[in-house]
Amino acid sequence: MLLPPITNAEYRGHPASAWFLVLTGVLSIIPGCIHYFLPDGGAGVIAGIDLSTRAATIIAVFAWLGALQIPHGIAQVIIGVRYRPLVPLFLLLVIIERGLMAIDGWLLKGANAVHHPPEHYASVLAVVLAAVALKASLRVR
Image: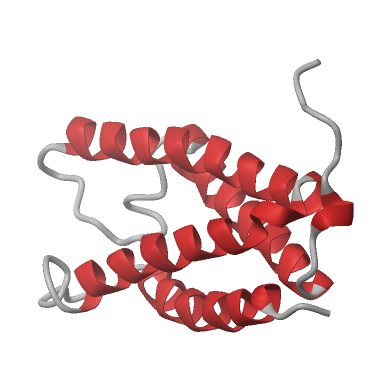
């Protein structure tokens, strides 16, 4: 079998945390598909990046990111639906991922950006919501 038996009976945290992980998975798959399948990867039409120079490289990097986001999102959905004992670990990974994205977008490389893409705002919110979900996932019911 491709997937081992379901382990949800072993999960003791709040069910809403698992469903939040499913939501984060879906919200990773959608931009992943945009980055991978849109002709400009969303770099110009969504992120507002000037593609007049190095367009091929920028679009390729966006497609590469999409190629990472899609399977990562699928894994989050599978964990939230079938393997809930792993929910706290994956929520921690969401916090690390989105935290690093927020730090980079607001404080480091993207700090002086004229235009912030939607992901910069969403990452800050995702860190807070994932922290709440992580806390709830660790509470024994």
